[in-house]
Amino acid sequence: MKRVLVVEDDPDIVELLRYNLDKEGFAVEAFADGESGLRALKSQRADLLILDLMLPQLSGLEVCKEVRRDAALEKLPVIMLTARGEETDRVIGLELGADDYVTKPFSVREMVARVKALLRRAERVGEKAAEFTEEVLHRGALAIDPSSFAVSRDGVPLELTALEFRLLHYLARHPNRIFSRDQLLDAVWGTERFVTPRSVDVYIRRLREKIEVNPVKPVFLKTKRGAGYLFETIAS
Image (cartoon, rainbow, N blue to C red; front, side, top):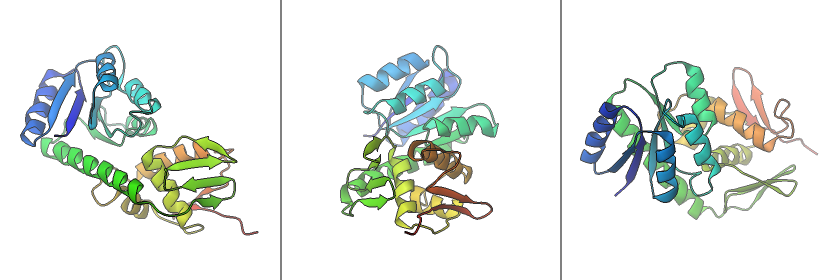
């Protein structure tokens, strides 16, 4: 049974989620503040986290940041809940490592569908990691190893999440080819996705901060305005 941990201080929302996820066969445990939720994550197994943005004691953004810093939790699927509709809040959540976001008030059916889709996506990532037999890709100073989801620059290991690795690997496997946001969503996120094309921008920005010497003037991940993104290689 998949275990969903909910960190939300609104008891009505907690009960709504608990009731409907329980009907779908999920085990649900809930916490009303960020600190207790984070402690539970570090001491108990969870398959997915539903995390409110505005929480007492420790905000959802801080919890998300701590989750992604923890090697044992960095691949945990996270859905961010927010009462705000501004795009800025969504982008911040994605930048900190959330996999998806839902704005309150939300449709229960849609939330359950997102939980199921994100769990299926996480399982596919694990299967792909186990099935990778490709050789290491060498692109300039970068070495991209699909067998271990490892990336290094000039021999120095770089810390990437599973989704960041998949996006980088896909682009590096098709150098100098421009992909639109929708093409990348289909290829990397899969057909069962609820994130928006803007999510691709967020992940590209995060990848640049990790793999580029100067993210403002990227050498590898280039933008073609109005068209999309590409992994550029310089012919010798």
